[in-house]
Image (cartoon, rainbow, N blue to C red; front, side, top):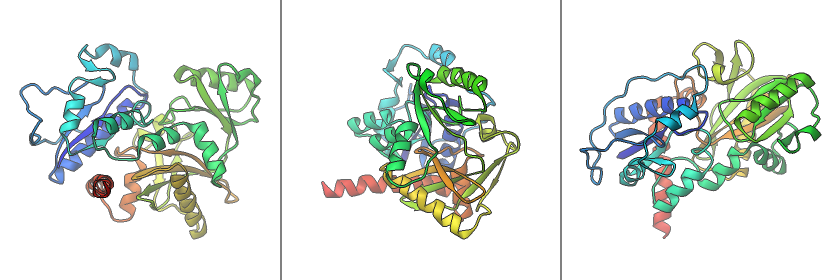
Length: 350
């Protein structure tokens, strides 16, 4: 198939997205597909190439690595030239229209929040993952918490905090302070007292104008991928130092990951059940990954849903799939196939 792997963008997870896109492109090329990697914001150089027909045979890309710190987005914006279709960089829409499907390797704002999915629906462009509405619901942490609570999925108690009401919110300590729509733990901190809370608010407000402040759950951290409505094996995440922040997520050796997780069968099945319940409650389709905390007494809490999980060398979804015998290349192709089935079934009913 002719496949565009769309990555980059201008979210705080830009660098993670590029690594995901690089690995996915190489995997799809290895499976015999004509896959090209394109930066949705910076554009794609099509000079001398005609993508109205078949794509040129793609080649394997050099390995990429996620830096220890989030990207300088202002520098990225300044680097782009004038030729663009609004948010979309030069030639991106033309390239995506010519593809059989677009593998969305985007993470974070303007990629995982439903905006690009909605635009692609209008242009008739096929893409992997869930639709625009469920993407928007899952991207918004305060809305996700409300939906989970209404559907019987336990989640930490919390508050929505803005620059207008933050003085009125008095959380219990310790607490977690999170940008409402961010990802990769960028801007997330733990506050143990009033002074730390003030600093946490300042840090998080740098990234977004709306935050989620929630109870800190002391315990073990886990994640459960769901593909086509079925839960994968549970994986445990144990950072060597601190919590599962941006550095610990993407720097090799920073975190010990165990899959399948060393927990009882009862806890495994309950967490997988909650993951599927969250998947359904948020109206997700295709694939996603749900993150959890579990206390020593077995109480577990769903933190959030990731609708375009990372596919880097240290990412969790590929590790969970591997525990079931599915290697990375097979997983990438499988995600393409289940997305194509959605479009094929839709065309049959029309």
